[in-house]
Image (cartoon, rainbow, N blue to C red; front, side, top):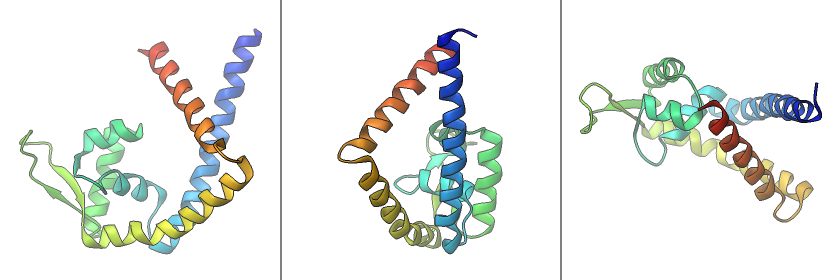
Length: 146
């Protein structure tokens, strides 16, 4: 393999490991609120404003079918509800219920504490640098894959 291919492969493997680490952290943070990471991921997408399942899938980089299954579970559990979408008759909007908002709020203190610990290790501006680099790589891959 070329040096460039090795670097891209190393980036991918690092992101896969990072994904696993975030899933483990997310599980630990979401567990006290009786959420899964998948539920939290979808529910937090609609915390500020209702969205269609397709819009949530695009935002989170997930499949529409997976988001639909999760949204249906959130509705069944009383953590979210469907609302009429004035822009599209068939594509309803998902929005959190008060119970869903309370579950998200229950996660916030642990998330804040984890962020503070990460920033203490990375130093001032460290997390922003990581985010900028990851966004740059993501945008590059979007251009490569069309």
